[in-house]
Length: 187
Image (cartoon, rainbow, N blue to C red; front, side, top):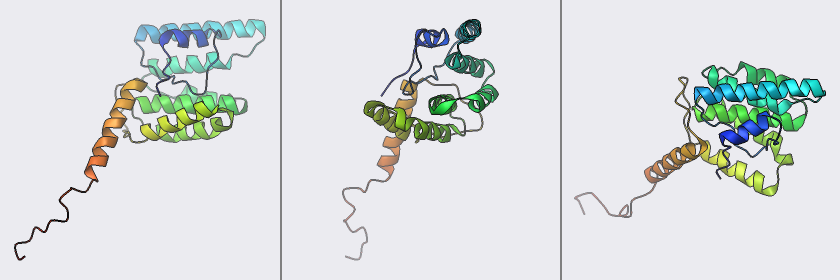
């Protein structure tokens, strides 16, 4: 289930050397230096696209991710990108990435953005990608949300946390083996 991009893959997407996949997990917690590097690489990719006359939506997306982390979770650039996204694939990418970033720090609206992204992406996904996203989102739905951002977690850390929550919830609803035993003293 873990399709977390590493920093090098994010840089390749920012440079326009690798396509962004709808099933990728983009919300990689980054250091300040990595955030700045990612934003700079995306800016250069955008400039190259302008010179070549080629739109670079993926560069804009990666730049928005870098700026999201640099700003401490301000999603205005992602919201703006959602407005200019062309076509279903770009709209799905923006919704999925927005959801991933919000879920990674347990912010409100993350699950809804993931659901919207999944609905948009579903017709474009392979069967494997569809099942992977469906399972991932179902698992992550057990995570709580809070107005106060939490330190961001990687996908692997979120999965572990969600699995623990699910196990705890499941254990709470199990009926004890001795539930048919009468506990009253009148028998």
